[in-house]
Image 1 (cartoon, rainbow, N blue to C red):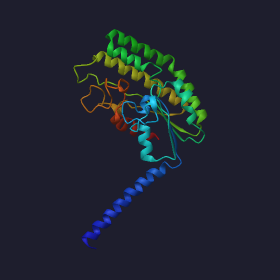
Image 2 (spheres, rainbow, N blue to C red; image 1 turned 135 degrees about the horizontal axis):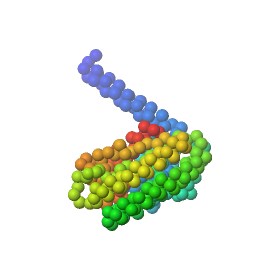
Image 3 (tube, rainbow, N blue to C red; image 1 turned 90 degrees about the horizontal axis):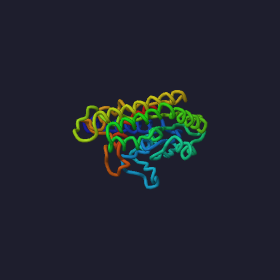
Amino acid sequence: MSRFRAVSVALTAAALSVTTLVAATQANAAGVNYVALGDSYSAGVGSGSYTSDSGSCSRSTKAYPYLWKTAHAPTSFSFVACSGAKTGDVAANQLSALSSSTTLVSITVGGNDAGFASTMQTCVLNSESSCLSAVNTAKSYANNTLPGQLSGLYGQIKAKAPNAHVVVLGYPHLYQVPGSRILGISDTKRTAINSAADTLDTVIAKQAANAGFTFKDVRTAFSGHEICGSSSQWLNSTTLPISDSYHPNSSGQAGGYLPLFSAAA
């Protein structure tokens, strides 16, 4: 065999191998009917490239649900996650996308119920004591009220999509502590905000387990990529538009959320 022909055969074999791998990946998603529920962390707020039809929900083509859809080509894809959504909003406005034919569901929800946005505003703009008070209020809500709200919502998801594999994803720590930046909020505030994420994730994980859903903890994936970290940041600090602040950027969606969801899907 000539050297040219040998190289040609090798390249052809490599191309066929890649084609087969891609086809196999997409074939694995054949018959998958995927519905992406949830709040801004699932909609992709903060990552840009928002779809024209999503309006104030700010659904992004760089969000982990959309990235998974693009990579796996499921039979159907319904992207209904929406910025600002609470458990009640998901129940009222998003569950109509589910049916007995739904086979895969993803969701992040609970942060808005516990007052994530107002807590962050207080911590950024007000005193340390005001911040700690706001965080404690949010944690109290998460511990005492959110479990019932999540339990009710998860029950509705099971009733609407009894054949679906449901993947519940949590929230990352926002800050690296101690931080590498002198400017910005204090490490005391940063630690308190991170502790609120811990409380949220603990509550969400327990309710997901009770419902028989799969919970994926994103905190380890985001470690080293938080705000004020020395490595590349996967989260936006205070930015414009202000609604993008304290949300994963495109790297956080692709490097943090997507691999965990893909592993569980």
